[in-house]
Image (cartoon, rainbow, N blue to C red; front, side, top):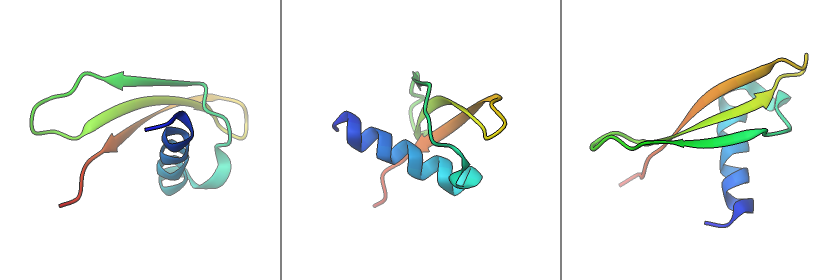
Length: 63
């Protein structure tokens, strides 16, 4: 997966959760996987007021 695809994936997840208010992504940190659970990323992004918010984004494969 290219960096652009990953950024698009993160923006899509943030938009579903919090609307289109998040435009910048500051950090993306993978969370160690747990067998049988979706892969998670910890993402930090500033909200419209400027406060840094942390979001957990799950990535799972549809069958």
